[in-house]
Length: 133
Length: 325
Image (cartoon, rainbow over all chains, first blue to last red; front, side, top):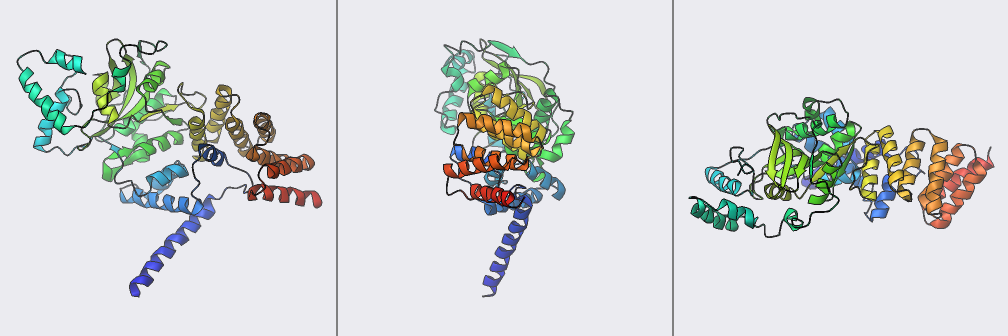
């Protein structure tokens, strides 16, 4: 029972936050049709509604901060993403490819990659020159 | 691939390489042929055989900062005044030690530049470079199960020698064979990003994808840049309803009501029953005080879609204003 109450409290606070965000992101002219809406219609993509968008926004913001982005910058980064992009990011910031040249190289991996580098399938080690041959 | 391998198989290490190749077959699952080998015999006739864009700057990459370095290179090429250091806080994820693709798009927009993801085609990549546009690519330099994600900028190619030229990591001019490059790029799902001044279109741009990129630029707050993107779109696709509609919305958002009216009218000359254009035209006319004409278009919008609540609101609002002057 206690757990239930805690859960409902958690859920309701998420919904509250979502509604708070929603009010900020409502279009100024409620009766104008937006360009993004028309494009989405043409492409046959489904508008998943403003509540889900607001939840995605909140989720991405929290994840950005959890991954080390400061709160003000996280807000600015989110503002430059479209709703569709936010929804495709939500819940996936830990797993999507993050270009940064990171590789946890174990010894056997080193050997494998050395071979695949020499064969020209990969390009991990700069000292393996593939193009001069 | 086979001919290249045959070439390399000469010499004392041939046997070792054969063993390595056998091992490789066990390790990798890349059976599909490469795109770059498919048109080896007959490359597209109208594609320049050799291109290199010397005006694209090079920023040597700091640790884990290939995203900021690549984005800074194309932004500076496009005329923006930025450094990789400016971009780091806009794209870098410290705990991931890297940058996400979508965040590169978002950061480009924050600098007033249109971010367009190309079709996942080797040919589209080369066509953009041939048109003078540097392209950011996502490579997986490692293997699918041991990824090493990396961003680089394609700045040139040589069809005859099958070479591609990149600004990459610490190398201002990395030259790779088509095959090696494509292996690494294919593992990045052929992701390629053009970042252009908003009045300039990617040569391979598709109408709706481009307009979506323009709309995203607009929602990111770069209203004027988005307006020139829509304008460019109406020139490339003169009968695109969405291009004229977007131009109208962006003009309206900037307070240019007369320009907005003209753009919506152009959209309606292409598709007379386009509900959104009818509705928005009615709105702007009402703002201009042309209430009778506004009501005409609001009715037409409802006639196109009787169930639409937005259109009903528009008509109600205009009627209210006409009743109480």
